[in-house]
Length: 193
Image (cartoon, rainbow, N blue to C red; front, side, top):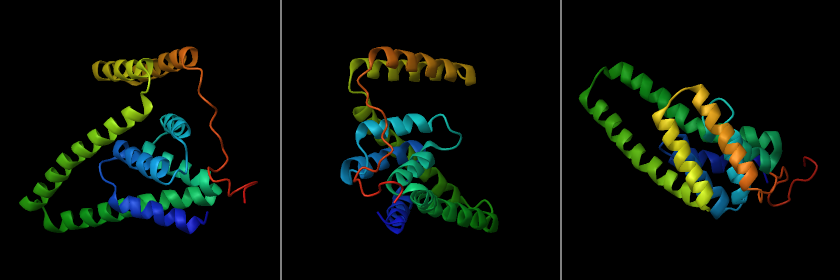
C-alpha cells in the first residue's frame, strides 16, 4: 500500500470527522474495520486498548497504529499527519479569526452549535463501539461497572484500579482472544517492504 494513499484516506477522514477522539474511533471502525477491512475487529479492539495507556488522544494513536500496520513507520506518520492536519488548520484559522472578531455573538453561537453536534456524534460512536466490543454479558457488565466507577470516583488511582481489575477479570474469564498481529491485513508488506 502506498504511503500516499494512506495519507489521502486519513486526510479525507480528518476533513469529515467531528466529535473528538471517541467519535473518531467510531469513524475508524466503520471505515477501516467494516468497509476497507484493513484490520479485523479483535485486532482493532486491542489497538484501542493499547492506545489508552499512551498520553494524548486515543484516536491519534489508533490512526498512527493503523497506518503503521499498513505501511510501517512512513504509513504511521502519513496517517497521523493526514488526520490531524485539517483540525490543526481549522483551529489555527478559528484562533486567528476569534482574535480579530473579538466576542462576536454569531461566533459564540457557532461554537455552541458545534458542541451540541459533538454530543450526538460521540453518542453514536459510543453506541456503535459498544455493539462491537461488548458481545458477551461479562464484557458488557465490565463496561457498565467501569463507567459507573469512573463517574462516581475520579482520579488516577481509581483509573488504575479499574484497569487492573478489568484486565484481571478479562484474563481469567475471556481467554479466547488471539494475539495482536503485526503483519498487514492484506499481506502486501512482508519484511518491512
